[in-house]
Length: 406
Image (cartoon, rainbow, N blue to C red; front, side, top):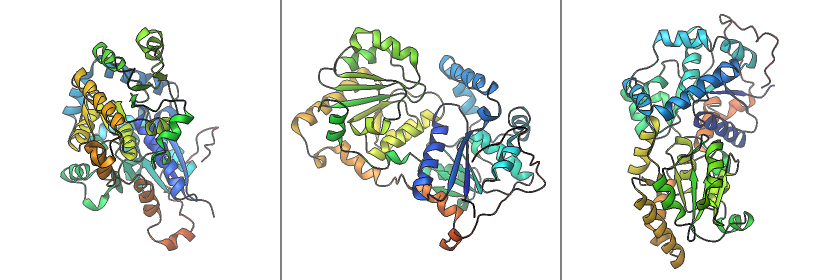
């Protein structure tokens, strides 16, 4: 009897979609070690030369012409991908998807990006008999996520569920699970111990993150941040923004014993554990990780599209506030210093108390457990070998000269 197989498909537009896929794969393994998961960035896997160029162009457009991206997002907000677009995606970019699925023989496909979600939906219309589960990786849902072939939507909040229902998705096909985060974020570590192990001081600490693409502050915000370096420990986590990292390391204002600059790191969980506040752009994954840790947030003005909706959700829920000016930074840092000096109890800290209460509504294990329950609706099915669900009507020839390990 082979192990059950879950194929998770994502795309490289930003880092959050793929990060969510890997987080869910790790969560599934922790909840159900007998389930085997495989994560693939589908476009990059099938088109390793072309895909990086497309992703790079998207990133450049987002940074140079954000208003254009916002316009496209808004004008298409309530629209699913039309048949012609789905056909074009398949013919130009995803022609070998059927062969990938045929070779891997998954018992379920989970998509964390709208493009592979549309491609698998198209294959299901042609006869592919594999359950399709879609994880919406933000606190809003664009129309491009929606396809009638999706068996179950796993969403972040009741608000997202309501948006799907408004667009005609049956309530039975929607489950509120929260956005998946890696098991490293399922529990908070001991702050004092981790600070000591990391060589950090026992003082108010701010973590500044910008996701995998890095974070840029304007000059006013940079001055406001570094002016507190004597009283607040600053941990800059800038992802793959190598130019920004090099520039900051050369600037005198960042050459301070209480300032640390990190590039890409796998220690984000520990960095959150040692911190008292997170300053970040409002990406769905990073904010959910902070939510799981009970870490209050400050948001840099969001990029157009999903980040704007994420930001609105977290601000309205009381998890953080937007940095409209440098005064917001100074006020929050002043509060951190006062709290640290007075050693205020958790009950007397309204922000911390609110976060702790709200955090209890988000169960970071829920999404992984939901996948397990979808695969095995009853405990008796755990003893049964999963079916191989690939209809003969679909082209099932393996990729020429290539074997894909699961």
